[in-house]
Length: 393
Image (cartoon, rainbow, N blue to C red; front, side, top):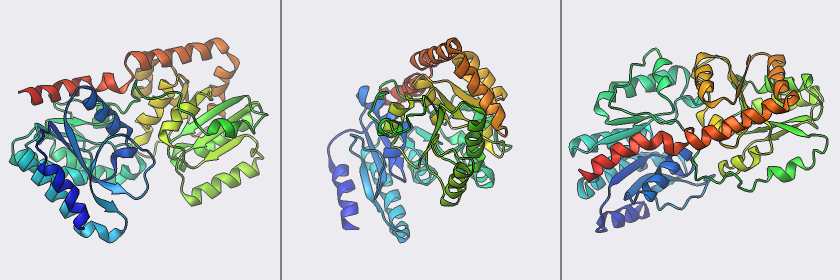
């Protein structure tokens, strides 16, 4: 415990200014939105410090010097870890007097909110879990409802999309003075990062075209339907499923693949580092981002996944709803399918497979959208402008 206190205290005693104090009660290195934000701050010579908790295992390594308040290595660690986390935030707010405070999760929200109000510091709160499975349904509504009660006290609220406020019954209109940010890929990310998937697909010599589905793999995410769509597709089309998956559902999927004799056409990867995702997506000719209408994901499916497809220039199969119809008027790289119908999914894929001109047009539209507006830097501009205003005043 002594070591957990020493480094934060050393940072606290350094005679250097802090423009922004960032708080996150988990390891930030796996959150692309957060890492992209830090890169923008660094490019704009904005001085920041981030207080967070270190994981024993982390999927990504980044070149930022975080202030880790201990390691999360057992369930009892929280008994003193969280109070220590709150204390360090309060001391940094009192001594360093940052110009802005940003919190990245609900546990970081409480101490950061108190410090911001106690010392009259502008406060930005980012809700990055809305739309994720662990934050959907009843629990998601409770958390969202609680956060909305405090919205009038927050100077900027950033989240995947302003559409979120229309999706929960407890939602309300976001005040005009606040901004929203879509979780999209940064223009500075390496779209050609070497990926081990290239070596894996070499073994599948019978496959000439690959479909991809990245992100969490669950029943509500149409995984079975996507696999069954292969029955209606030519045998030279294969499927890559890359993402975390529960053991029980993994067994179901593996049994389905064997039952339908699709072992030579389906690659199941439980995890692939996010930095490798962009590199291996270029091996695909279409990406799938479909959800069944069981909770919020149906209306607002996985912005990170979809943005990765757009950034790498591959068309996407999405739900047929108003949100995607409107977005596609700008992006122009989506095809629509019924999430419950393997045949509908296959029909959408065949449109690209049969029509090379259509495939080329959709790919070009995706690339142009990423270059012009569907990138993190563009989405973050209004927030950055407001943060700079606070720092300079």
